Amino acid sequence: MERVLFYNARFLRFQFGGNDNDEASVATTAAETTCSSLCSSLEEEDEIPLMQTRLIESGVVSSPEDFAFVVDKVSKEVVNNFTDEERENDDPNMAHVKTGVWQVTCLNDDGTLQDPFYIVTGVCMEDKVDTKKLRKAIFAGKTFSRRPKLSLAPTEIAEKLAGFQSGTMAPICHTVDMKLFLEESIIANTDTTIHKIIVGSGMFGKCLSISTDKFLEIAKANPKGVEVCSLIKTSKAMKKGKSRILG
Image (cartoon, rainbow, N blue to C red; front, top):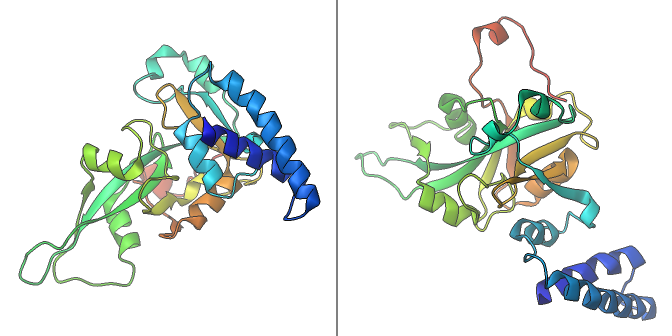
């Protein structure tokens, strides 16, 4: 509950525009007083979601209005609970993005394995990662005598790295920093201030809805970085010139 108090106070200090001066002191006092009443009501509710805490800790999210937790209508665990019409009624200015945690292992010249490292991908729910494209993006400009191994990380490792259970992960806000490779079509031809990205929230049955510009800002703040590139398997129709535009 102390963390709830701290973060709500942080929101109010931001709203008051406080700095290290007398006005900031007043703002802080007002924030903490308000948060005391907020915390008393929150004691009767669930704990503050871990995803919300991490979004705030990113320093990019400046108010609770910057994101929302919405009903999950697309994950395989819940998709059959909604009609096609209910799913189609979603805002067209959004993209549902799924997360993959990948294990990458390079080989020495003698064939022995090096210690693996891990990266994250974000592609639309209906798409599949083309491992050739992903490998090319990871090792751009590099050559190897033995091709690095690339596979989805074991569930227990992925969950430990991300800090969330399988099926609820987002491409951002992980326990351990990992480079993100984001499919370029997700943000192509979109107004990133209006377009929203829907990802895992760390909670079953709910998704995180966040504006694309905030999503990208959080991703770029990751020390490991983010790369927007072509990742998905493309159909013959698309190769012949049909474009796929989201939002």
